Length: 269
Image (spheres, rainbow, N blue to C red):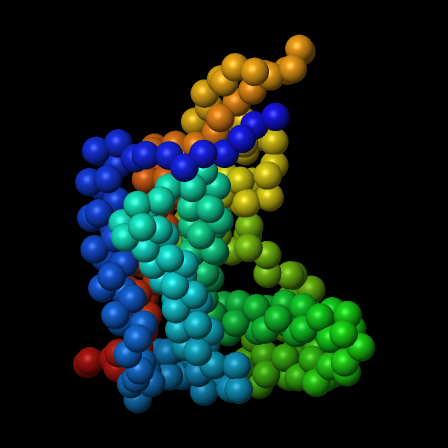
């Protein structure tokens, strides 16, 4: 049976992570400030007007705050506490990648109808999750599923979405796998398949999937004392894997901030 151990990062990994963590500290300070609303005349202000009361900018801001919160937790563990757990870094990176990818996914499309469609699809997923959570506690949901469907599709029609897009709001579930892959293709210097692979690795470690545990994400060292027919293994986080996933996540965060700042500025003619 494998056992986890706290590992030590090599000097090159430390150097690269310290550079990334410097950016994380800047991002954290930004999330602690009140974000001003999108400027009048900006594309994001128009997006917000159309998607009200589920403003696109609010969803993006929430996703970015969550992404940075998880990255800063990793920074605190590694840089401040000098602890490198075998698996926890990948769980934190998974959450950071999912959330930053969600921000990019919402902001990246040049076509407003596609941005509005994605925001409504995300709200539909939220509504379905809320309904299931309410059922588990015996509570009554704020709206029925049919009411949510009518409300979100109504916003889509008012926004001028095509009927196919309107139906797609409640037909095509927004999953993190598809969001991460699409956002990866929409991020400068990144590919969707690479972002998806990193997310799958992090998710696999978070859920103790055998394929992920046996991959190169975790370093393995055989230890004596195992019963006959078994091999004892000590697992620790791989330097290369931690640095790679941090770098990919940082790319996604950087793109999220870039798009957010670009779309919230008024057009200059």
